[in-house]
Length: 425
Image 1 (cartoon, rainbow, N blue to C red):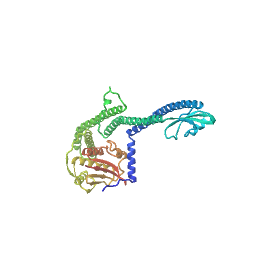
Image 2: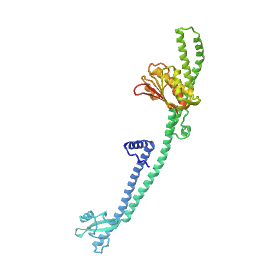
Image 3: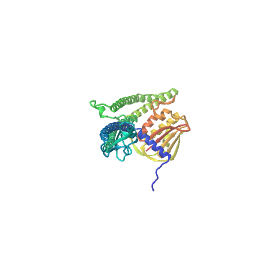
Image 4: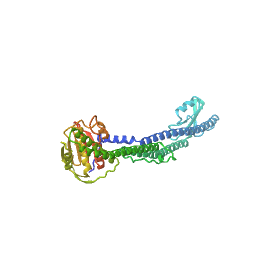
């Protein structure tokens, strides 16, 4: 059983939307422009040629008709017998030409009502009558008709060839533009090794066009950006490594201090510095893309409960539908632990962790995520207002989820609160 085509308002809107999308492309606009210009040029040239040839053909026929009229006039005045194609008040003589001849003037005219194309010439005769001759104009009419057909055929052929050549040329340019745009999207997505590598931009001896200039500028920008980010990554990793050794000694020294409030403050700050250092090292590894997965079958419900117990928080765990996924257990625990910690640090209770097959959500009931975070994702060392922290927890969670091949989305609930959704494959 075949399904009838959709013809409802939604289907029409979809067709209109697809049509607008196609007609918005540079290829479509160039094709329309070339077609309009070719049609206009062909119409102009065709009209000029048609008018010129028609005037010449009609002029020659009129000259022959007037010469013939002069001969017939002489024969009429001499009393000779007139030929069959001439006479006084001939039947079929156009009324306008008859009136002109009766008024004493001479003139020519192509007959409109004749079964065959005819060129008429008429002049005054005695008694206020009209002496007229008619000549066969079929050859001239066929010449003009043939010319018109040749103009139309050649114009259609020229338009088709020009449109084809123009479409090929424009398609080559748009293909290069699409490639450049695709590389730009890859760079914005984090692939700093992406390059256009346009042959024109790489070879200075070849003529440079605008597309090559854009491609070369994009490659230069990507190289500069990559160099700066690599320098930043190396600096972050070096600083973190350099801090580990003195922090280890500082931690050992803090453990030797006598009990008391000052000692607790020192140990707390040392622990915070160690956590920050480890986070910086983890981010530097994520930035360098050196992380490797250790895949295993993971049951999500018990893993979520274990993460909550280890966090020491009063997070509620809801298992709607449990599932087994193939993932890196340690990294998955790291992502969930950071999400739960962020919910308690920046949100308000109750915090709920929900497992629904391969989708895990962590929701609090606070003020929600900042707008910049929802739109652009977490940014390291940036927190909302005067919140505590360094903005690294969600950054690490997002980086580890990308290593896992999962999708982490930040949003705000309609009734208030932040919602982080982790979708595992």
